[in-house]
Amino acid sequence: MLNKDIIISVLSKLNSLMGDDIKLGFAGSYARGNQKNSSDLDVVVTKSLPIESIELIKSTFNEYGVHADVLSLDLLLIEDIELDSMLQEIGFDANDKSVYKNVIKETIWI
Image 1 (cartoon, rainbow, N blue to C red):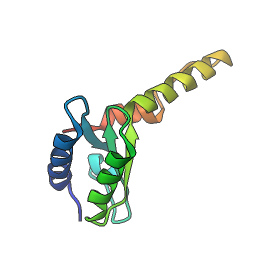
Image 2: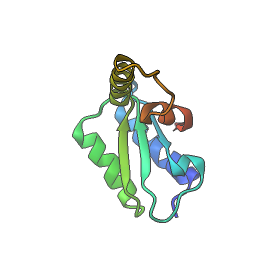
Image 3: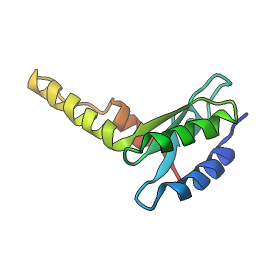
């Protein structure tokens, strides 16, 4: 089974291919240490990547028998701001329960 040490090693190698302005990490059940055999790996990137880089990340972890979802932090932030604005427009307070806010809290950065 894939574990944190292997993920860190693989992401470190991938990170060296992505360029200096991209940072990689992982979140979700693998970061919390409560993954199951059926768990997806949530790979977090600091900004949007070209499709070729996303496919490289996905195919690399597919070799370990794990499906990887690539989460772009910059896009998640835009979505979070839009959702908070929408909530405030209809009279609700913004909250700390969004994908972006959860990912920020639990990501293990490489």
